[in-house]
Image 1 (tube, rainbow, N blue to C red):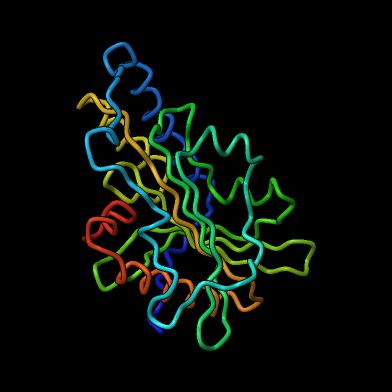
Image 2 (image 1 turned 180 degrees about the horizontal axis):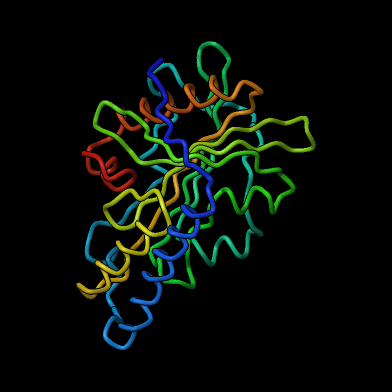
Length: 238
């Protein structure tokens, strides 16, 4: 398996304060230009309709759709999910070794402040999970690198579920809230309301390093198996 790259974030107060100030500044810029940045055209309406369900194969590179779900976490009530997202795909795959990976892709045409993708570090604790770590990293694929976050979660001290995820705004994968806000502003300045997507993979494993390596291999295999246009919409990679 390929090596998992992690970017260990120093949790020093000064660095946290700096990040908070940058995010606050980005939000202040958005507010300051609110009267001028009122896009009405949805970016998704200017391109072919993204249909995630048919674009994700049920079998690829030794992976196949599992008959029984492994318990993919739904972050909110179904009614709220339907109001936030245009499409949600949740599946569980198993490989020839019997290893399972849970996949969840949530896509929303409108990524304005009222319709933001819900990050796993928020929705997992809302379901009773303990958030043990949250680390920035890079997912290596044959098409390039994707900025991701890797989190460790546990439920009741028994179920250990490491998670790898990334989000996209328009055509760009972003890692942080600051990067996300900057991309939203860039699209708004062009008159567009950006669409967005959250791509999440997880597995139940008390060996975190092994889980992250498996998730990286799964995501890389999946992206390599789909057409370039679909891959671009899902990850920003050709």
